[in-house]
Image (cartoon, one colour):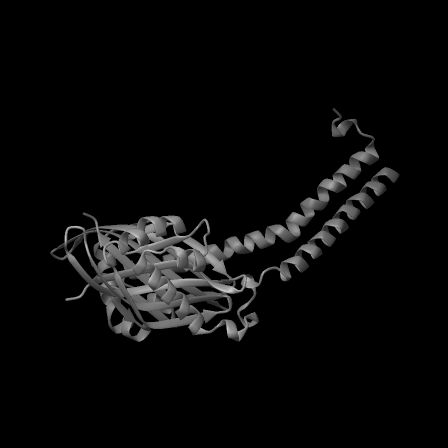
Length: 173
Length: 163
């Protein structure tokens, strides 16, 4: 009987210890990086369309020049990253830069972004942009398309990071 | 090597306490958080699925009810708000969904607080009137949560013909 009581106390002690650990975990969780904070916690200065527009312009120039630097600076390199164009996709940042950005610049790409519409929800944002694309394919075909891009962002470590993109365009008639 | 059963009974109970503590911690603190995250993912997928089911069954009322009032819809090179979509592409999207079979990949969902995005790819093959359709597509949806309900805030559909 005494052993059973002692055992129960020990179990209770284990539970209390775990509860304390849980409390610590919750406190630590609450003070963790702010990307998971609710929308109202976001600083209004963070929700500045100009921040997203500047990133998009860096990215636009990076596309034209075949320069991966702005992509590595502004895109979050994470395991689930996907970048869609038309029905195709690049999986991960290196795939995007090496197999899409760099080769397309060699085709004399000019890229226009206009009418940027931004939406903010706390530590998350998205931008929809009109696009205009001109390039010449290796077999000499001139491409002139217009379309749209959607860029998703998360506020991480004090900066907006692109976490997903999708774009599509069709020939200008 | 000593098994637990070789220990004196009080020490055995100590070991039980050590095991029970983390188990309780998991059961009461970690598991609910994990379940809540899973539940959010499932709720988002359910809305995306319900939207496509509504299109395929010609149920415009349900389809529109799943769109937020400020939704932006990008497809076929155009941008539409809810009102324009209602009187514009919605009817065509329902006819297309009913006429042409679509095979979709698993939906990948990321939830960030009260916002989520969901993407998937698909292949669409069949006939729409006189037109043969064989294309690969991608779908991106941004969803927002108000109360307990997830609603679609943005859709971007893109596709290319399979050659």
